[in-house]
Length: 263
Image (cartoon, rainbow, N blue to C red; front, side, top):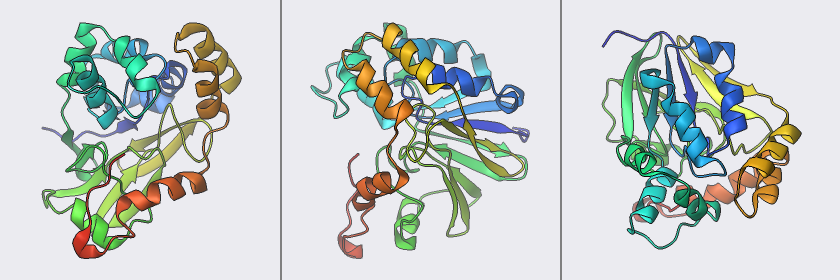
């Protein structure tokens, strides 16, 4: 495959159509050779609308399954009775059969040759698991553990899951988390990243009040007003998110007794 010049990375849209539309309208996103969505696409207040919009982008938009996407399919197909996220069971019931087929077929990862960055691996949580946690301040041994099976040719790993944007080096590899489009942690706005030939973390600001009003009017989720206010107007701070996620990366476990944490 010839090298790609630019990729816009959108992660953790979580069914928030106004945020997704705002990012897709960015000039650099419109001009990007590819758009890669690194999972947790539909579990939110407008799941069907988000999937329909992305499907309309054709082959230019490449999608990866996140743990929330997997859970929607498992719930609808009777493979699980509950989902930890309160909005997810409702979201699962809004999906058509073609949506379920699409989500069930999504790969867990993909690799693209990108100008300036070489072989880039895209995944949701880590290359080996769709719900374990790594953070910007996870210790080196943790990064060595989760990257152990990655092809040596891959020099850049792009992931999501924790909704917090960062760029760091881990054992010689560049690791990029674009943050979340629909459920940001740390600050308001829709967070994403532009890759090629370097890495740029981006934030798309949009009218949160208008988005909340739109979600409240368009989504039938019973708790939509509180949900929209909590994630679009007053998202969790970065300190609160790190405090909540920190124990899940195994930082407090003895190195020889670590287990993969659940989300």
